Image (cartoon, rainbow over all chains, first blue to last red; front, side, top):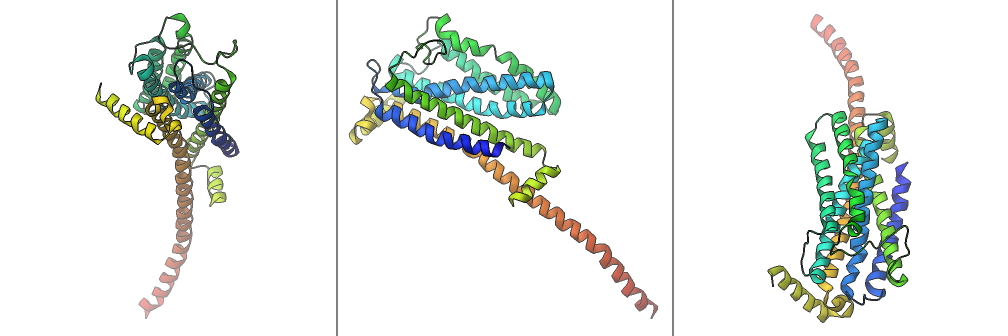
Length: 230
Length: 94
């Protein structure tokens, strides 16, 4: 069932990400204040948005597991947190690289960067918690609970640039306001973000598929599937 | 200037000697390192489940083949055992 979606989303990502990056890096005009350094936005913003979206998936999966005890939700939580952790680390790294020429420092204990660091610690904590508990149902329940508690960090990240005076610039994307950037800068960013979403969808589905097969490997349907493949 | 900054400055100089798209107005090292690291992480993220899926399916198919071979051997063995004992009985009598 997941197979065709993995391919569709993977192909969409394969088209959208290169188009967004080439458009943003080579065609979009340079920023009047930051010059060409602003082009880091074409990887920094998608990874930062996706890192938060991944945590929204982790939190939702935790909620579904706690309420309905759905085993698939536990699998989704387990797989999405690995992707989320890598995207959060990327967002922090690209932010630091961007900060060096713009702020004159690799790191600033700014509200946005600090809340993103907390997000990374949440991902790492969830992973460590899952590794530490051997019993499957206790592991699933504990990690679902922690995932749900960590959701509180998402609005903090989102509104940190409004609630506190920070070095970090305001949010690039807003659901309620028109973009502040000109279209020739904004559109490639939108394409890149869509591409990153497609890739994240494909990767999470592919990872969930592998984990479900691993957990169900003794069953008849998995044997039939493997037979059909070979 | 720290060692990392000096390294980035040297990389910038080299990128600017290559051409304008690589130079990025003097920020080439920052921009291209960000892009490079991101692309590598994305590729690794996409490749890992693909490799795991292939390995798992191969393993399951191999296990199935082993099970089938064991079952066939188990079916053959009682038949062989009974034929051996049937052969042996007359010999011992003679």
